[in-house]
Length: 131
Image (tube, rainbow, N blue to C red; front, side):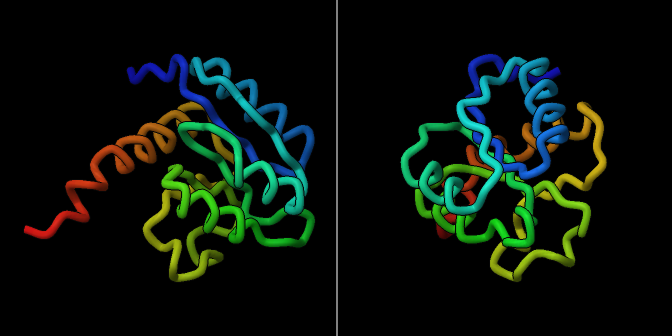
């Protein structure tokens, strides 16, 4: 089983009870939740300066889409995954390659998606390099 001890996480989730549940899952996995944000405006501020290893982004934040935050994280080379009940079809084409965690989910699903997100980020330089 993959160890996430010391992995710093940014959580963007607008539903308080769901945010608390995800935070608990992440902490049980050994992660440290550096910031948990519920609103897009605050998420944009945090994304510009937070030092994290991975982010979990709810797609719909009280009717606003989280994609501007995802763009900031991508520019900063911070890996992220989307958490949504809408499925992959709710993502713009620019994020088609991003991991998606389908709500509702269990800790095992979160563990797998975080591992895949971090692994993809680690392999990305080799994938992007011309052959």
